[in-house]
Amino acid sequence: MRFKVEQRRHIPHALPWITPVLSFICTLVAAAILFAIIGYEPLGALYQLFVAPLLTVQGLSELALKASPLVLIAVGLASGFRANVWNIGAEGQLIMGAVAGGGVALIFYGEEGFWILPLMCLAGIAGGMAWAAIPAFLRTRFAVNEILVSLMLTYVAGLFLTMLILGPWKDPDGMNFPQSRIFSDSATLPTLIEGTRLNAGVLITLLVALAGWVVMARSLLGFQIRTVGSAPTAARYAGFSRSRVVWITMLAGGGLAGLAGVFEVAGPIGQLIPKLTPGYGFTAIIVAFLGRLHPLGILVAGLVMALSYIGGDNAQVEIGLPNAAVGVVQAMLLFFLLASDFLVRYRIRRVRSAGAAT
Image (cartoon, rainbow, N blue to C red; front, side, top):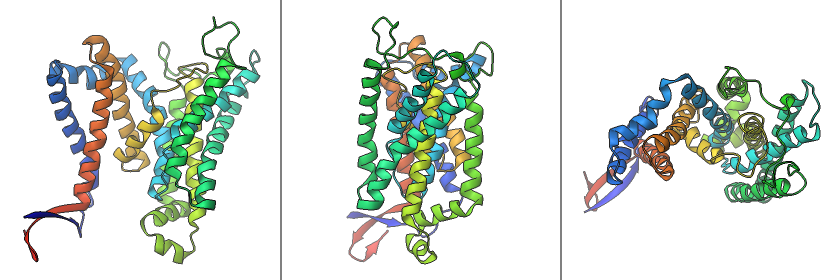
């Protein structure tokens, strides 16, 4: 007796949207078992992770703040993933966007002007796009795998940032800490709710998600991206250039990741430091797939993943839950999502003998 994997001939339209919910439920069950094994009360730990942060205005504002970069990056990555262009280096593109935008803030340090913040955003987008252009060029010109190139460039970007804040951009009044000067008021995002860290970057993220939906669902470019990814042969016959799609999707992903980097340094951080995020560029990959590569689905998925970050900090303070356990929960979510996707597209049949199956 053996087993055989077969592709399903028909997939119900609603099923791909149901599986993320099932994946989240399976993650909750598995997380409860994990917490019990390591000595924590399961329901109490889940409460601190997924419920307690939603009960205060401060918690809700932090949730939106954490979700903003995840959604922004995931919307850009989703366009590439739909075209089978695998940009895995959004974390590095975020860093380079932060470097470019932060550089503008430091150049005009001490000056006031409404134009400084928009210039930082443009510089951040350009920095992220420039970093994404490297794997795009190598992919289209030399057929080099963009996964490896974009991923390796992440570490180069991190080292470049460290070099700057330990060298020419180091704060002369920072007591020898590895950091830049704190940005002036003109180089920081305005706060939306007094007493919280919620800033205008959240509103821009909502507009980007809406624009991403319009482009992917209602434009010729979106149709080309979807066709190149799902039916490459048909795309060639239709005259759609795969190289053009690679460039557009890589630059879009890099630009939005760079903008997310600017929102971090011009928002909650307020300066350049060695570790800008807890890995938003990588977590956004999970967000993109959890949201089914749909900009509006990504909004919901971004809130779920942001809740795991906020809840993890809360559980660490309230019950002493190890921070590594939060990473395991996020990994569980990705695992169950991939497993459910596999079972949606394929079925496993038990084969008794050659030519006979059940």
